[in-house]
Image (tube, rainbow, N blue to C red; front, side):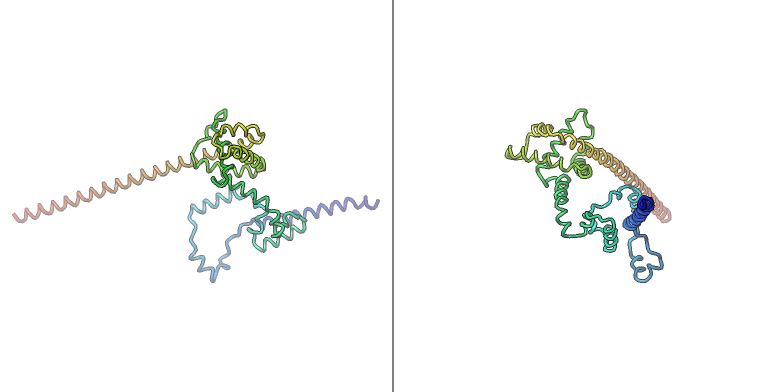
Length: 295
């Protein structure tokens, strides 16, 4: 009976405790991501005064770019836990460790323990190798061969994908970089690795790197994960349209600058020509005057 009477009070106490803990975590997050503001003029006197006087000033374009980055969602992805000990200062680490002990988060606490972190980060290192092979051509032949097969399959897909071949090599590099992100955050690394293993097995049977991509594509299409991986590659290939559009805008801008420069030089040449003609006229008039005075 007594326990039943105290149950509401206990629930209220627990609820208040969770509210305070949420507030503390919010304050911690705010302190960790808050951009350091400029110091007041009073605090920047002395030695910092000379340093600030010689420091290069940001141009209007640089300020605009910085504002665009801060207003965009570019920095909203957070930081992988394994990098916390590397990117946070000692004070921030100490503060975060305190709250991690409060909430008893063993996984995040291990990220600050070098011994436990080394054992736990082996899978992450393997993932990094896979992503590097996706982004950079020539790191792993089997990965390059698989991406060629996926690209060939995309080019022959029905209905046709209009942007599959845009921008050439630059478009391919952008597609590989975007594809690595989609695979990583789509939690599809295992599916991708299984396709890479299938390519390695096929190459081992052939005795060399596969040259008949159509035969390999036919085998890969029998695997259920191939089409989901190809869909991600198709999404990443939209970067080809972006870079093609970007190159078009830069080309128009460069053409406009060249045209303005040519017109400017042409006007300067015409002005110089008129100045030389006027000077020649004055010299001729002077010589004619001398002849008249001599006669």
